[in-house]
Every structure is written in structure tokens, then in C-alpha cells.
Image 1: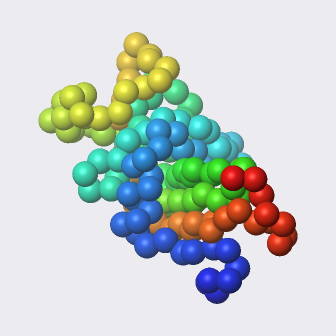
Image 2: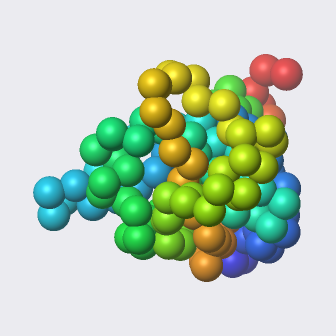
Length: 146
């Protein structure tokens, strides 16, 4: 992108580093043949995979297991007109391996809405894109307060 348009494209590693700084993202999936968006808390695994922990009985788990989904997270400063947004596209799978579930029980995400039976969902990042809004202290040529 043209550096004068106020945006900067982010590389994959930079996107993952920024994602690791925020606790909430939005999963985009298909529900009854229509797009659905749901805010969720998450963590990143060491390989950059997105990890969710949710109710085993949830509609979300049934809809996304084995499906291609998108996951978006951001951090925006509305007062300064700056921030960033990252979108990851990849396949979501419920973690079934007992050793992996044990590891995630020790190191993985903690659900903000605990359920009696929970599962871990892993989204493997196949496509990672992001951009940063280069704001500043001006808007339409007018200085904004500091």
C-alpha cells in the first residue's frame, strides 16, 4: 500500500506478535448457511495457532470443527485514530489427543465462561494478514489534543 494512505501492511510474524497482546478476538464461521461472528477469549500456541476453550456442547463447536474459519482481532485507539487489525484464516479442529489436551489444560486458554465439559479448539493459521492504521495527532489537517 502507498505509505501516504495512512495504512501499513503487517507481516505474518508481526501480526502474530500483535495478536498475542490482546485477550479477545472474533471468530467468523458459518451458521445455518449464513456468516456468524462471535467474540471469544483466546491465546496463541507456540506455533502461532489460535487456541479457544469452550463448552463441548456449544453450537460453536458443532459448527466449526473441521471447517475453515476466520479469526479477527484488533487494538484501536479511537481518540488518536490509530491501531491495527489482524485476520487469520484457517481450519478449526477440536483437540482430541489426550496428551495435547493435558498440555493445554496446563498451558492453554482459560474460558471466561466455564462450562461443565469443555474442549479446546485449535485454529491453524493458513493465511495471516494485517494492517496498521498510522494515525497521529491530525485529522483532516486539524491538530487533535494530545
